[in-house]
Structures are given as structure tokens and as C-alpha cells.
Amino acid sequence: MTIATVEPRPYHHGDLSRALIGAARKILETDGPAALSLRAVAREAGVSPAAPYHHFKDKAQLLEAVAHEGWVELDAALSKARASTRDPSERMSNLGVAYVCFARDNPALYRVMYDCSRDKDALPDQLKEGGAYCQVRDTLAEQSKTPLAEIDLELATIAGWCAGHGLAEMIGFKQFAHLKEVLGGEEAFLRAVFQHLGMFAKFAED
Amino acid sequence: MTIATVEPRPYHHGDLSRALIGAARKILETDGPAALSLRAVAREAGVSPAAPYHHFKDKAQLLEAVAHEGWVELDAALSKARASTRDPSERMSNLGVAYVCFARDNPALYRVMYDCSRDKDALPDQLKEGGAYCQVRDTLAEQSKTPLAEIDLELATIAGWCAGHGLAEMIGFKQFAHLKEVLGGEEAFLRAVFQHLGMFAKFAED
DNA sequence: CGCAAATCTGAACGCCGTCAAGATGATCTT
DNA sequence: AAGATCATCTTGACGGCGTTCAGATTTGCG
Image 1 (tube, rainbow over the protein chains, first blue to last red):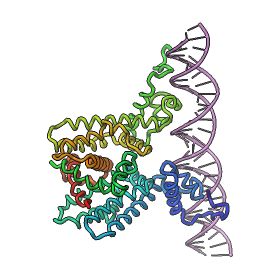
Image 2 (image 1 turned 180 degrees about the vertical axis):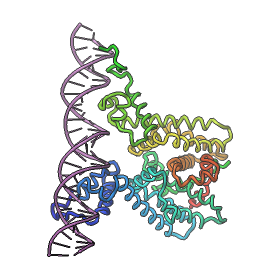
Image 3 (image 1 turned 30 degrees about the vertical axis):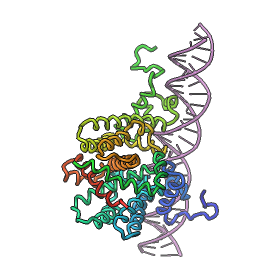
Image 4 (image 1 turned 180 degrees about the horizontal axis):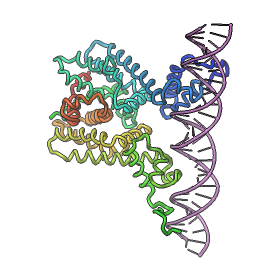
């Protein structure tokens, strides 16, 4: 697996931090979260099992670095979706689809992102400081005909975020295969579910 | 020889399967999912590390049994919430709150439930056969003024379930502490988020 | 009663996360 | 240029993990 035989890496790696993060992501994509051990990461990077400890306090801290990359990339994906159209309602819809598709296309990374958040009982602050969360909120605000109260804006953003996350976690379940087929594809299914959020919500009004 | 030892469990336990599930749940509640090793479960049940293998194929299968108990209990919690009132809209609202509160009060169990589902790429079939999922769907159907098409009913149920799950996973995050305070408690926060689902959804319409 | 099946134990394997001690290389001082 | 210092990497070890296997113990059935 290692290329060390051909060109023996110098004793000092050069940029092991980044290499370890890359190795971790490769393992995640290839073999899933269950296979992601610190030793496997070190192996993949061609270093000894103890080497990572000179760059990360422990395994959790390496995972945090991986998760951070994930949030940045989710941010980029949402930015792209947001810029994809000028039609207000289409923009919001695209944003939701983009969120779920990111999770579907990077399932292991997405898992690590939320596992780390749960360990800290908090989402990354970056989200509320110009990050992905703001994109949802701002898109909501832009497209509201009447200006939204600050608190309504926040609550609606949370509601949408929760729905997106929930759908992202469920999208792969076999039970939905039939609906995806009936509705003509996964994206159509996603949009249909988002549309029906309102149907659920109206019963929640006091 | 068998006279006065402390409390010598007979060589054969009697009902080790159930004892193991109970031990697992105790460890989950006490020390969280990270501490839930098969060896720890065996220790808690007072049995050797290899004993569980006579009752469960492997660790995953024991967790599945624990998860099953969780789904049954979630089912019961939703039943109770559903029967708590006759006011249609209040009933639906209570159902959502009950779902999230179950997750909040049994965080480790809730985690195991979805971890098992993800490993199998499917929710338990029981859910769609008279279980918790049906309670949400039927409550939706009962309360719709105009009869809902089958597919709309299903999509709305999924939408609500996803929102509930998403909120259940986020409810503990520090970022929401401020809102809970402003809105006067956690339950008020939950209801407010559910109400705002509609505000998000209207932009998802094509 | 005798014997097969079910159940539990003890010891072992390879993996894991982590740490301490020592080897190696790069950088800075003089 | 020489030596000292510091960051980096390795080796080896520890305890804990999931799992397996051979053997001990008990139960239940003929």
C-alpha cells in the first residue's frame, strides 16, 4: 500500500498534518467510518502509529480537522447552489437539494461532521459566522415578501436545517426506494418531501 | 462447596439474553455509547467475555436487540402523546414534542436505534406495520379537512419524521440555548420550530 | 441412568488508542 | 563550520477491544 519502497520518504515527512487528514478522508471514502482507525491512517500515510501524536492531541482532534474540511466543503456546495439561479423559490429549493446531495455523496464525511459536533454539544461556530447556516438564513430572508422578524428568521432557518439533516440521514433507507421511483428520481423525491413540510407544519400551529 | 460463597450465580444464568440487553441499556444510560463494549456488558451481567456469543451472533446483533426495545418504547411514547388530547392540531403538535423528548431523554438509546438502522440501510419494518411511523401518518390523515392522496400522506409523514429526527439530533446543541430561554423553555422552542417548518416549505414549491 | 445439547469459562489472536524513550534530521547560535 | 537545540519520527510497550476455540459444567431428553 505504501510507496515507501520506491522512494523512501525522508525521515521528516514535510507536511504530515495535511497528509494525515488526506489519508483519513481516503479511508473514509474507500472503507467507511468503521475502518477509520488512527493506525490505519498512519499506515496509509506511511508513518508509524505514534507519528500522528506530534500533530494531533488524539484521534478525536484529527477527526475534528477532517470535519472542519467537511463543513468548508458543504459551505462551498451551498454557495454554488445558491448562485445557480435568480428565481427566489427555485433558489431555496436548490439549496435544500444541494444539502442533502452533499450528505448523500459524502456519507462518511457527513457522519464525522455531526459526530464531532455531538461530542462538543455544538455545531461549529463558523456556521453562524458567514457559513452554511447563514446561507440558508439569508436565502430565506431575501425571498420573504414581507420582512421577517429576527426570531422568525432564525426559527425558520433551524426548521429547514433540521428537515434537511433529517432527510439527509434517511435518504438512503430502503423504505424510500419505491417513492423515489414513483416520483421519477431522487431529486424529485427530495423536492416533494420539502414541499410537504408545510403540510405537516400547519397542524403544529396552536 | 456451594455453601457460603458470596452469591454464586448458578453456572447457567437462566435468562442471559435478557440480562445482557438490560446490562447494555444500563451502561448506555450511565456511561454513554462510547463505553458500550461487549466485554463491559458481559462484566455488568457477571459473565465471561465469551458468554454473549451463545446468545448473539456478534456485538451488532446485541445492539439490534437493544434498538428494538427502543423502537417499541418510542412507539409507546407516541401512543401516549396521541391519546393525550382530542384537539386535532394539538394532537399533532404533541406527537412531535413527544418524539423529540424521547430522543432527549434517551440520547444513547436513540443513537443506537439509528446506528443500527443505518447499518442496514433501512428503518425497522415494524415502524410501517402499526408502529410509530403509522401513528404520525394516521394522525395526519385524521386531521386533514380534505382527504389526502395516499402519496401526499406518505410524503408529509416522511417530512414530519425527518424534521422530528433532525430536531432531535440538534436539540442539545449549545447554539439553541439562547432561543430556548427567549421562548420560555424547551417545549416552547420545539413547538416554535415545528410551526416554522411551513415558512421554509413554501419556498420549496415549484 | 446415560448421553447429547446447551451453556459458560479461560486462554489466545490480532486489532485498537495511547504513551514513554530513544533515534534522526533541521534549524539556530556562535 | 561546529555544536546545541528542537521538532519530528520510530520502536516497543500497556491495557482494552471483538472474536474464536477447546474444554468444563449443567440441563434435558431418551
